[in-house]
Image 1 (cartoon, rainbow, N blue to C red):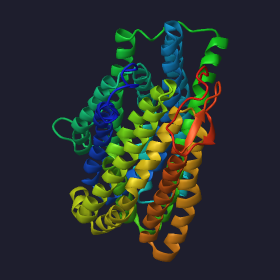
Image 2: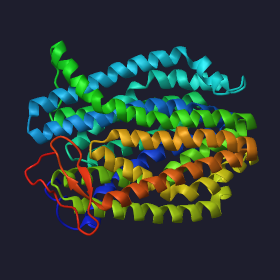
Image 3: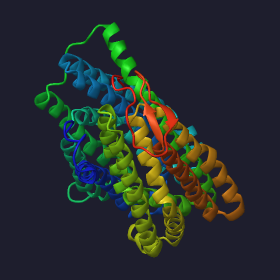
Image 4: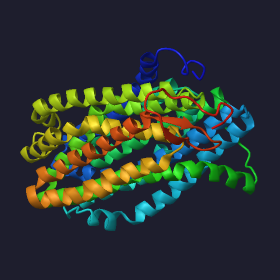
Length: 470
C-alpha cells in the first residue's frame, strides 16, 4: 500500500481505499439504526430516553476515538521505523491506557446519572428508563473503547479489511440479539430498553475478543509482561500527545448536541425523539464522505511524506467535488422523502414532524460538511490538529450553539435546525477558501515543520529544499 499510493491513478486509489471504509462505517451505522428501530417499537418515551443518552454516549465515544487516533499515529510511525519491539510495546500500552481511562470514566458516569440527565431536561417519566439503560451501558463501556483502540492498531499496519469485518460482526450480533432481549422472543425475557443496552454490551464484547485475538495470534503485537514505570509513562505520553487533541476535537460535537437536546426538550419528548432519530439517519446519509475522509488521511500522509504535493492537491480537489455532489444528491432525496423515512421508524406524528423538519433543512449543508470532514482529515494527516480543533470550535460552539439559541427564540424548531445548516455552510466555505489559497502557494519544507508559504501563482507544487525532511 505504501509504495502504490505515491504513484498511479489518483481517483482509482481513493476508490480502493474508501470502499472498505464504507463497509466498516455502514456496519457501525447499522448497529445504531438497529437499536433505534427496535427501541422505537417500544414507544415514544423509550425512543426519547435513548435520544437523551446520545450526547453522553457520543462524548465517551469521542474519548475512545481520540485514543484510537493517538494509537494509530504512534504505532504507524513505529512500523515505519521497523522497530517491532517498540510496536508491540505501544500496542500493548495503548490497550492498557484505554482500559484505565474507561474504568475511571465509567465509575464517574455511574454516580452522576441523575444530575447529568436532569440537567439535560429529562423528565420524571423518562428518567427511570434512562437510568436503567445507562447502568448497563456504563458497566459494558470497556467493550466499546478497548476494541476501538485495537482496531486502530490494526489499521496502522495498513489493514483496513479486518477492522471492517470486526465491525460487521458487531452489527450482525446486535441485530440478532436486540429483538431477543428487547421483546423477549423465545426463551429470552423481554427487558425493554434494558435489553437494548445489554445487546450492545454483548455485541461489543464479540469485537473485543476478535480484535485482541487478531492482534495476538495473527500480528503478535501483544506483550504479557509489564514494563517499567518509566517505559509505560513514555508510551502513554506519546499516545496522549496525539490522542488528547483528537479527543478534544471529537468532544465538541456532543457538547453542542447536548445543548441542542436541552432546547428540543422544551417541545416535549416527541420533538427530542424526532431529533435523535434524524441525527442517526444523518450519519447514514454521510457514509460516503465519512469513509472518504478516512481514506484521504492515508493518501495525503503518504504522498506528503514522498513530497508528491501535486497529488495531495489533486486528491483534495476530487474529494471536495465528490462531497458537493454527494451532498446535493442526498439533500434532494431526503427533502422529497423525509416524512416517509421517519414513519418507517416511528409513526407518532410529533416524532415524524420533528424529524421531517431536520431532514429537510440540515441536508442542504451536507456538501459543505463533507468538505469540512475532508479538510480536517487532511490537516490531521499533515500533523496539524489545532486548525482542525479551530474548525470544530467555529462550526459547533461559536456558530451552531448561539445561532440555535437565536433561531429557537425567533422560529422555534425550524430555527434550531436552520442554525445547523448555516454553521455547516459557513465553515465549509471557509475550508474551501483555505484550500483555494493553499493551492496557489509553493511549499518550502523545513525540518520537522509544515512548510512556510510563498505566493507562486502559475506553477505546481515543488519542494524548494530537496534535501529537507519532514
